[in-house]
Image (cartoon, rainbow, N blue to C red):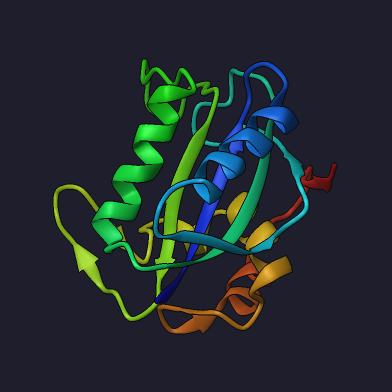
Length: 157
């Protein structure tokens, strides 16, 4: 079993219920066991800022899935929950990102681990720091990376 960290976000509909349902579906998936869940955080939109606020969370799982299979499980849950990819960084009913996977350094057309932008996004690092502040991503811990970012507008829900 390996430890992996996932980030979840929603900005359409009942955001809290959507994140809770996505986590329930992940827990119900073969080969995945939830070990930690952050609080939900209300965050301003990032990238494409002309949209509603987001709710973000992070989870830790123990899994015997490969990193690519974990990604595919998350994508299948997104699709089943009605995710439609219309524009980059646009509104989404649910987003499930594999942020880090124990011992994995991957860069291919489907998956980059650790997630290529994890250390640049406070809306990802704040919930992740709640459950794994000492997780090392790249050259620094989650807490160290977070200390360099602007966290304005991000509040625990």
